[in-house]
Length: 129
Ligand SMILES: Nc1nc2c([nH]c(=O)n2[C@@H]2O[C@H](COP(=O)(O)OP(=O)(O)OP(=O)(O)O)[C@@H](O)[C@H]2O)c(=O)[nH]1
Image (tube, rainbow, N blue to C red; front, side, top):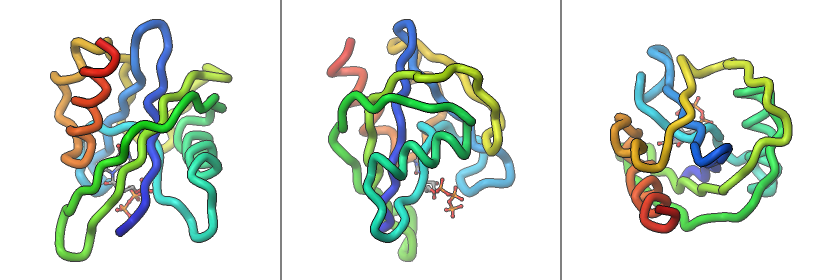
C-alpha cells in the first residue's frame, strides 16, 4: 500500500484542483496536489514538501480528513490521505500539472477525478455544503 497525502486547499469558498499532465500516470485526471510519503516521513511534512515542489507555495494545514484506499492494479494500491489546508503564500507556479482551477463546492462533481479521489470529493461536499 502506497501512502499518498493530498491537500484540499481552500480560498474564498473555492478549492484548488489540479489536472495531471498527459505524461503523468492517470493523464488529464483531476486530483488534489500532493504525493507519496517517503520512508520515515511525517504525513504533514510530506504534504508541505510536495506542495512546495509542485506549486511553489507554502500552506497551513487545518485538519486531516478520512483517507481512502484504492486499488488501481495488482501492483498499485494507494491510501490517499487528504488534509484541509489554507494558503500561506499565493504565488502559484505550475511545475508538474497541466493546469489548476479554483472550483466552488457545487462544481467539484463536474471534474473528471482520479478514481481514488472520488470518495474524498463526495465526503468533502457532504461535510461542507
Ligand atoms: N498527489 C495525488 N496523487 C494522487 C491523487 N489521486 C491519486 O490516485 N493519486 C495517485 O497517487 C500517486 C501519487 O504519486 P506522486 O504524485 O507522488 O507521483 P507520480 O505521479 O509520479 O506517481 P507515479 O510514480 O505513480 O507516476 C500517483 O500514482 C497518483 O496517480 C491525488 O489526489 N493527489
